[in-house]
Image (tube, rainbow, N blue to C red; front, side, top):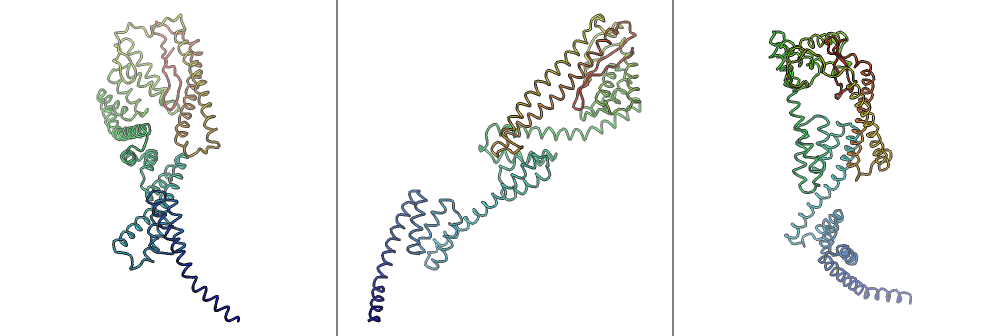
Length: 448
């Protein structure tokens, strides 16, 4: 009896299995048809669901082609690659040659896309690291990170920062190439403001290259000028030395320019060259040299006060007429210069207060957006520009404060000194401004 029941169950199972299989196949075919329809109507997620369901019910290798297409449309390249590989393996010799060739071509493209995506992710990491190093002024390390990023993924988006880094390293030729390629490849993908800023940076780089070339020529003219000075060719020496100074404004050239102009009897210009030498070399000139130059200024002033004024030139003198023997024209009874200099000093302090307030206000705003110096990536570029503006405002504050302090001090000094000015040719005083990239202030030169 037990044997009979087992045999009966086996018989029923044998009969029902084909029915179940037929039922699954029918369901699979319905899911497949629905999946293809959704694929053609660009409903890719629904297409993927039905096609995967069809393959789970009936592992038909023909379904894999459409499954791969659905994954490709969804940009899931890894699953698309697996589906195509299974399609080629399971289909074997049953796949037509044209279809096999198509599948292999698509598979090759997908593998390349997948590789590029991995490279892009790694490249972005190098780019972000390079950007942070650039902000820390660690330019060489930043350059290496940007080169790694560009090697992995040669994107135009990396080129602008590459140009900035190379410029900071004074590799101007490489910086220009990076900017030119950035402008060429970015096309209409960047804003007009960003393109304009890049073009401005490019123009500045070309100017810097020209300045570098000029700087290389300056020593040649300087050497020629010194030789001409030793040979007593004062006019020629002055021309050569002044050209050297225009190409490369080294304050040390000014002493020899003054000597050459004095030899050429251009006394006023010589005095101004010597004065500029004292101003720009302030704190770097020996006491012996300073004393000698001041004595030269006094002697040359005596020479030119009864002669003709020189024509306006680089050292700031204006053309004039034959002097009447008076050293100064202002009324000694009034402290005219005192109020001007003092006013400049007060103006400097007021300007310093204003720029300091503006800079502090802007810095507080930046600190709110970037706590601890960590800015959101989308705000990084704009915050760098704002921080640069704040730094310039702070520098202006320091310069204006220095000018203010010196101006007030000079004004106080002139309050007592200015009445000594007279027209009897016995007292000679001149006030020279002291304001350049290295220092700010004023200097009184003369004899009493």
